[in-house]
Image (cartoon, rainbow, N blue to C red; front, side, top):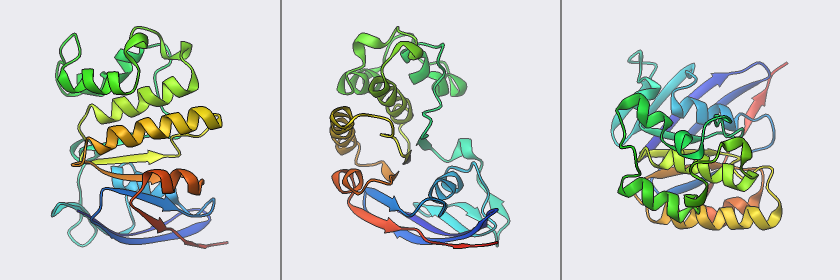
Length: 214
């Protein structure tokens, strides 16, 4: 269970977000500039809130009162950025296993979880291809696979289907839904400006509003 009660002053708005998340997949809605990506970055430990508290399964991730901020690398969070943040000159397989190599030496060939996710996402034929030679949909799936092979407790998806045509977007959403259904232990927050994506994937929608500042 994820409990969020945070505040953050940004250049043009003041963000205040409070939620108690008990279901698996949530959609985060809000107009442009309300701070949806900022909320995800605070949850991931990439940005520090000004005030409040974040707890996950009774573990404190951030507490202003306790002056405590759990480092990002210890939060077991998977993040699919809107930009995907892939390494274009590395192969799909090198991208998928990149963060695992920072923690420990992974096996030279896919272990059971990696092999299953790669197959589910239709990436097996492309593992040895550089990412910059893959299509947009294939790159999206590489980014999702990279996040999931880390077996995160929390998966953050920031506009992950942006830039795909309608047919490819629907296909990628369906694959994502299938994969997440087999990982019920992972809690998910999806940010999207498209309601159809949110309703297709999520159990409940959350609305984010912020106060604009001069």
